[in-house]
Amino acid sequence: MDMKVEKINGVAVVILEGEINVNNSMSVRAFLKKLMDQGERKFSVDLQKVSFIDSSGLAVLIEAVQNLEGVKGQLRLCHVNANIQGIFQITKIHKLINIYENRELALKDF
Amino acid sequence: MDMETQSLEKEAHQHLKENRYQEAADAFYRAARAYQQKKEHQAAAFCLASAAASLASKAGESAFDQPAEYYEKAAAEAILARDLEYASILFKQAAICHEKEMDYNGFCLCYYKSKEYQRKFLGQYLLNPSKRGSFNFTSNKRKRIFPSFLTWLELSFSSLLWGHGEKPERTVYFGMLMVLIFAAIYSQGFLLKAGVAVHPTPMEAIYFSTNTFATVAYGDFVPLGFNKWMATVESFSGLFILPVFITALCRKYLMI
Image 1 (spheres, chains in turn yellow, blue):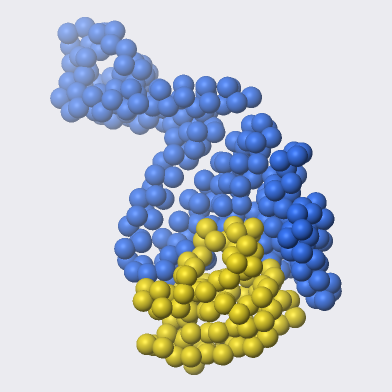
Image 2: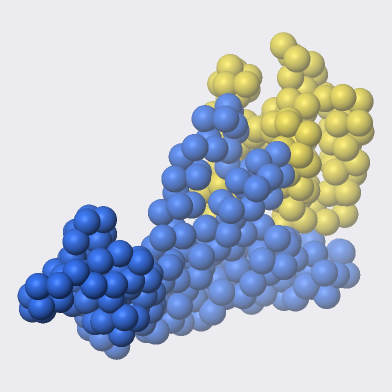
């Protein structure tokens, strides 16, 4: 599981790569928390290279969104590939979460 | 246990890809149980919702009662995780499955819960907009508060008036409450009784209020002064509330 961050126009673009599962979801959580502790409030999470995300990974993303809302921040998802889109649809969270087709659209809407 | 959960979910998704829905649902269910044991309710809710969706995909060839049950379990986990908006969506999915199964009691209960949790979620959000507990609102929060307030108001009124169409007895209680409130108002003013303006007794006020609510005008009491306007408001309310009761009752009994 690789995690990178790029700062674009005041937005922390988090690029995740590989599988987000019960064994590494806490690392993703810690990574996002560290960025928040550093003062980042606007996040765009790029899931293009994420091959699989399990329920614990989804829970981490949601927790991050909730925590950010508590400090007037925002988190958006972008570049969601077909595999992950399928997981979102089966869990019905696509009805709740804002998903953007690509990074540019996600950044534009902040 | 972590490795087991990980492999179970991957296995479930693999089954889904190969259209083996029952196997996928079983694997999701076992993963959900593992999350439940760890008290990770949000993850358990996702697994149960996935199990339900897998079974619903299979249900073209069998029944929707099991997906409905799983959606209800998923909603219960979402409530434990304090994600009321997700719980509302899951109860709605459960209601859809119950309706497909023609289990209207199940449908009514889940539909009611879906609306109630949506109302509670909005109430929670309005009380503390910075901690809304979910993730649907993104930009410009101020613009979201007013529509959310209107929706909350509408849902609260619907809940009070007829339990979102599922509890006709509430319309009766609502009507009785209105009759008593208006009776209290009438007793403060004057009514014309046999050509004489009188302060009505409590029983006379209730009698007049009930007749006005039911839009029956016997003519033995005539409102005077401010009571005229109150009687107009009450009869107008009665005109709307009585059909609401009939509609809720018919809806309930036609479904059983």
